[in-house]
Length: 169
Image 1 (cartoon, rainbow, N blue to C red):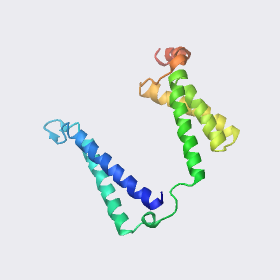
Image 2: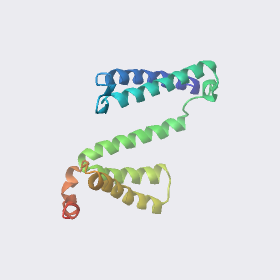
Image 3: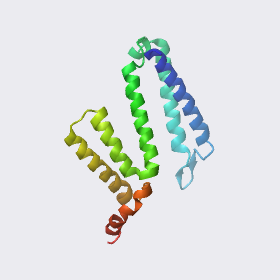
Image 4: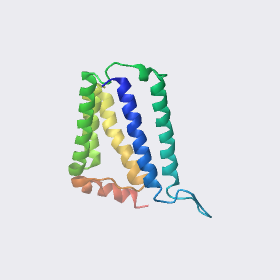
């Protein structure tokens, strides 16, 4: 597949998704609700409509051949790119599967460790700092600030002392 073909395929696919989202959003109120404001489907509908317009503009520009991508006949992905994308997708699948068994924070720790050190080739210092800091930031954002619990699986009991500190005030 060439870059040119990939561009038109994605524009058509996203246009179809936009249309589907517009129809689904239209099942809700998309107009103005007196004394309340926009209906619950208004934002999804109009964002999808905007996305559809940009897709149509991309398709038009593709047919006119005015963008570098619409003229590019090079392969869309090289073998190296396919390898990196495959490893990335596999890593994310591991993150999702591991979340079920050991919880998001432990899974995120191992995902970041693998991805930063072995895929990104970052230093051990940066890797260690990030695998410690990112899960803490995610915990503080979701569990403490937003009060949205994330899955912890078998590690749930590890968080009880933290919960006692968070909710004791």
